[in-house]
Length: 208
Image (cartoon, rainbow, N blue to C red; front, side, top):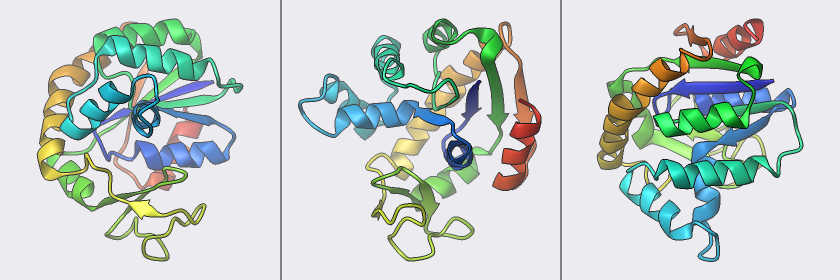
C-alpha cells in the first residue's frame, strides 16, 4: 500500500506519517530526501539541496525525481507513506511511474496560510528521527529540547523562517495546487476533515 499525503507545510503530514510509521510503513519525505543530500558536501546533490533549503525555492523536478528514484530503490518495504512529494506536475507524472496507481491512496489536509506561518516559526524537529514538535501546545515535547520518541536533540530548521515560508506558500499555491487537479484525473484524492491528528490518522485507516 502506498499512502500519499498532500497539504501545505505544517498541515500535519509529518505527525500522521509518524503514526503510520509505527504501523510498519516506511516514511518517504520529499524534504527528508533533500536534507539527506544537504548534510555532507560529498552527497551527490549537496549544492542543489543546500540552495533549495536556504532559499525556500523548490528544487527542479528533474533532480528531485532522481533523488526519489534512488531512495526508493533502497527501500525494502511494500508499505510506504509519501509526504512532501509531488509538488509539481512533472513530479506527479513521475510518481505514477514509481508506483502503480491502483496501489496509491492519496489524502489532502487543509490548513490556512495564517496557521501555516504561526506553526512554522514555532516548529522544532528531532535531529535524529525527524519527529515534529512545537514550542507551543499541544505539540510541545515533554522535556524541553528533547525528542519524546528517541531522545534526540530538537532544533529549528534553517528554512523555518517567516520570510522563507512566504516563498514556500506562494510556491505551493501557484505550483502545487495544480498538481492535485492533475492527479485527480488518475487517482482519488480524499479530503481529510479538520480534526485532531489522532482522528485524522484513524480517518486515513478507515479509508485505505
